[in-house]
Length: 237
Length: 237
DNA sequence: CGCCCCATTGAAGGGTTTCAATTATCGTGG
DNA sequence: CCACGATAATTGAAACCCTTCAATGGGGCG
Image (cartoon, rainbow over all chains, first blue to last red; front, side):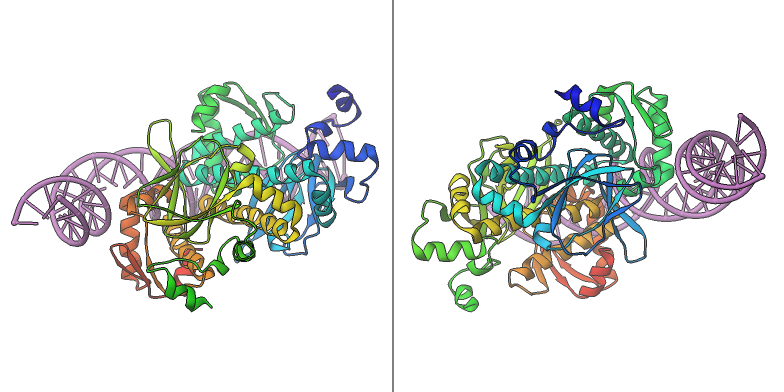
């Protein structure tokens, strides 16, 4: 089943629909042909294209099928402040349910395929389908859980711990979607990583060389090979 | 209306039920007398009492009526790591919907009055009542929104900015619940604040004296008076 | 009143940033 | 295909911020 998808799509990372955030919602609904309106499948955006501008009106959630996104806000001094990176299977926009607007700009880090979920129609689905309801609650809740862990990460960890945690979390997010390779291709620049982690690009660079010196990673441009996963986990906390 | 509540309860901070997180859910439901089972109102816990132990099975959400809570996990080296502080109107446990267990220990910082919401019964209410459904979604979503901002805070801010942001966010959380006083009584120790902010107690202390020297705050033990709110906001970012 | 814990203050050390220079990589055009 | 320029990444040295270690001060509770 998974191989079938792999052969059909995804030269790089993508997620078989069965492993997507929306999980059971997606495939069966499509098969039943009941929900074309809710789920607008696989819109494509090219690298650096902006999907959503900060503060525009919230209407739909985005689920990444393939590629990667970043979200950022523009600070008062005109700089870009990255909120997060989103990988295949991730869902973007859950915070906007409460604010009614998108709280950040969403930009494609490379060519992406996106499934778009109309929120209002999703809500009507929640009312009629308990498993959808439970899935959405679980999605929201696990997002909170993940953010809580992220807050701990940032409030407590030093630079090298942050970076180790960041790389390991990339690995784990891919793993959860069925990609267990120790080779990771970074979709984002060092500048983006530094910005996101609240470090300088120089520090990120220095730590990456340090991680190579102690044989935890092998870094070549945007490609990272995890030579010692356990050590990386320990470094990340 | 609000004054009525103020006179009835709350020597220190508490929230009139109309301003509680559950908002419209709480009062009308009780008045209708339909939902005694969902909402177990105003259980009391004394200072330092543990409401919930980490990793125990999740059954209900906690809404604070008066007093304050802290949540923490025990790290591998046996130390306490504080996740957050909860004030009147706040809701605790939303992350546990996905994990099915409580992800931290919940402890009373002083004598507290708590409303307890059974999750399963809340879900049946979600199915029958759209405004409840919307409220819960909004609660979950705004929690995500707040955590996103918190992640930005911790990943980017220096020690003095973190502390300024922390104090201002305390002020704002009280304000949202109807307490606009510039006098804040800290429910937690310096040690707790330092732990939570990922700083040392010495740094917290030094920054507080600095904030006094520049006439932003006046600090006397657990009491903080905000002398210059705008300056505090600027310092916090 | 005295004890203990919490908070404050000071000086030295370590980690991160800043500034500056060099090297590597990518896309473009010849 | 190579050369070139521009951008991204790496490396080094000094400055700054926060922590660590140590000592002192203060407030609450028996």
